[in-house]
Length: 156
Figure 1 (cartoon, rainbow, N blue to C red):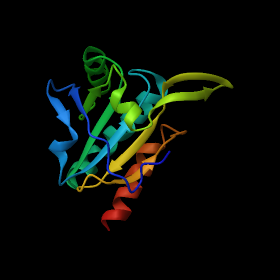
Figure 2: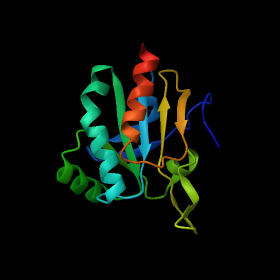
Figure 3: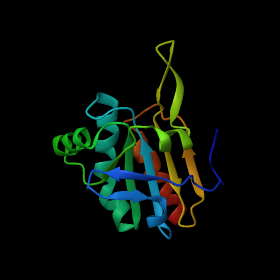
């Protein structure tokens, strides 16, 4: 299910910066939210480091970047420290936000069905409408560049 063209579902979650983050705070800004399965795992680390390496370009364009997984804040803080991540990671232990964005549910890995976090990304426009939704990211290490390319093409 794609969320493109729809109002982004609202959320309020605790961030690795010790603050509550909600969609309302970001009205008027473009927000990139990437959902990933687990802190400090291979694919998630490659993806997060890719976003880290592009972070200044995002900031220079006024874009907010948030990572979301069901890991605890303590786990997020370790992940941030290990890889020098400059952005906020949100903790969604109940998977409420992830479910609202289609980032949690049935997935198939190595031919086995399981329920869990689906690696995906949304770009939410300043008006709260989803501009782009990658509802299944397959190449974690290449994905941050895809996101950046989309944003740079869009902003001209």
